[in-house]
Amino acid sequence: MMQLFMAAALFLLAGARVPALLRNRADMVFLAAAFEALGALLMNPDIYVMVDMVLGGMNLTKLILNSLMILGLWYLHRAVMEAIAPGADKRPALVRSLPLTITLGVQSVFFLLTGPTDTTTTWAIYQGRLPALLFSLMLTGFICWVCARIAVACVRYVPRMRRSFRVGFSMVGLGSVIAFIAMAKMTIAMLTVGLPALSVINPPEFPYSLLEMAAIVLVGLGLTIPVIAGRTARRKQLRWNIETLAQVEPIWAKALRGASLDRTLKADPQAPEQDRLHRMIVEIWDAELAAGPSATFLTPEERRYLLSVEAKLHLSPATA
Image (cartoon, rainbow, N blue to C red):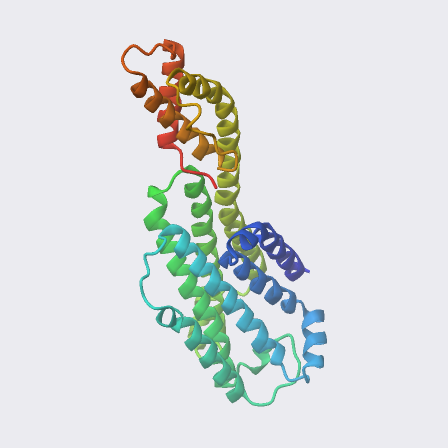
């Protein structure tokens, strides 16, 4: 049942990223959540057995499950790195994707070398075979590598971020640390098969599912918080643009009439509100210059208001 809760949480995250996917034609967080959600579904024993029987009853579903988890983590890693330090990785795409390509390729080789297996939701029964053990270690090792890179990047860059990003990526970093601990513990548990001495650091009861769920929730919420904060800020900026435009437009029309420019300069109603606002402010100052030092069409209150609007425009990013 825990697997279904994990899948539901991941599908919710994927759904929350649909607007970004439609807007940008691509979204790595959406891909990460979608791949991980499908993997979590296959982790459910009933679904696993049903799918594997359709595929021939030879645990091919296990290879698909692990591949989905690796793909999801790869896109999560890419999304976090791009959000934290956009454009920092200048390497060609083929070189950047080598860890993913090598991991998927090598784990497939180990799966084939494991030999014939019958459908089972407990892959550990085959880990007495070295290739089966190495196949499992490819996944846990890849997760540990990805989580370590994300956690280090968060520790390095979070202090420089603004508030919503700092909160969000602190949660992402904490989730990555929790996932790293869970996967490191799972790796040790698997290695005790061939190295019994490791059992002294391998407590029998360990809440893997609880830690995995906590990591998914933390990372999911952490990636969502900056998106929600950014969307709220854009709505607030748009509302301010519309309200300010309504205040500035009468002053702009009066200034153009006072400088006899109202027949040559026309408003563009199709332009974004912030662009129109910026243009009106510039044209008011131009009209004042054209009218000469004797111009009196701006009151002191209007001048102070326009200067305050201009200052805020210089501080606010353009909204499309």
